[in-house]
Image (tube, rainbow, N blue to C red):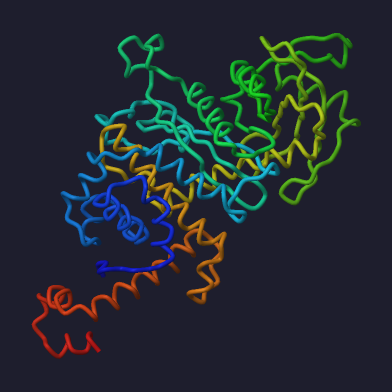
Length: 421
């Protein structure tokens, strides 16, 4: 059923927070999009959206592609809305997670940013777009904050030396700096082994922040050799073997996924970084699907113990949950536009609709309107869609012109009357 003059106060109230980001005409198109994007589609595109909305395809395309509105300002308004409410705000018991995601685009090789590169989804190279993302996460919530559009060096005239080229590390640092300047509260910055470079560690130190990261199995750490008792550069996979052979009795236990996992703590140094770091050798899998039997975390927070370090790093999975929700429920990878500006606008609108669900859930607005036992993101989406369909049906019954147009192809007056009543 198409959407006719839908009027759900919860959605309208959320959209009103963004009124200053648009002209009156733009705001009308903007307020319609959350309604349409909450519906279920096999494949979301402009045509399917336009069929659900009381605006035509050309007007919708103009709004998304050519109208003058700034997606960065829109996102800043979104973050400010979340920050100023206690139920949706940020606190120091959470972390800032950094990671990248890559919508597969095997048949869109002319799309800006699409190239044969490492795809985070497949864990191997494929034709895809890549976005570097920041996310706030604590034990009970995860909130995507912002993202940056990544283009490989091959797309720049001078490659890596081009002044406009930015690596994933550069984009990650921008996101960290933005989170700090936006006064997002968090205790640590967490990221996987790919981002654990000395440049990143140095940058975090200049911002007076702490980090926790995993390190690759082939990375060398400066540690005291348990056999020679002298400092030596040892690969992390070799270090694990030495710990199991000579230092196993000094390991401590931490509960992870319902199991007790041995953890050994030691002081280390990494190449090109002057200060000592703390390392935690966690000798167990993150999950049954994990292909590694051991993980080594490093941190510049020397006050952390093994339990706290493991629990904080576990919060990094919040960004993975956010990626899954954006793709499964909010069509994050369904865009059919080619240029960076348009893709970024689409991604920001996906973040906005995700935020609508989160805002409703955290403030318990839904329970004042409808009886439901929603728990997951999809549960809330379906419950809100029920309100939208009721509103649309009510508008259709009350509007003779809409009703006549909608039933124009129906010959049976008897059937029409049964629908009206």
